[in-house]
Image (cartoon, rainbow, N blue to C red):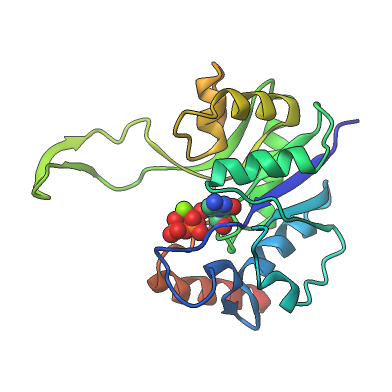
Length: 227
Ligand code: CTP
Ligand code: MG
């Protein structure tokens, strides 16, 4: 039977966030930010392993008590997110038919419900898919002077989130084939490879902590779940 394996790239430096350590190690409600991420994935009953990919030069991971039984650590992070995922996938020895759920370490407000919805929706899917949000706002295209050059119809536009869930075999082949291309998520590698990933309703709370201003919202969401 195919397993469900989570793969969490966490080898980034958080350059837009700034600060003395990468954002995934920032203290948030008494835990490192990515502990919350890893904890949610661990809570999903169907997931048997949560693999986190950190940089070989990481100086922070060992300072914390992670205390998550499904957690495995791979120090094989690369220069780009795609490279970290590719290296992690190789290191974790998944079977070709296993489902891999790739999830950003910095999306710490993921909910168990959203992951379960993704897994249930894609159970019999031949390709796999991603959590995503239909665009709700009116979308503008800017010119070089940051003036509006066009209003883009939002019909059919979605914002990609993670987890992005694909069979290990297909994902490995697609990432290998996309090596030279500029892919910022797994779905684009699968698209380049000729497939059409399914869009599954995500969650507005599942945003990626990118700038310091994002912290207050993450803190409030996590605090609200404790009650
Ligand atoms: N990531 C990674 N390896 C890299 C770059 C990014 O594993 N070489 C991970 C990050 O740690 C993060 C996820 O990919 O969990 C999404 O990336 P992003 O939010 O862009 O994080 P950073 O790249 O660290 O931040 P920035 O782009 O601001 O430098
Ligand atoms: Mg980045």
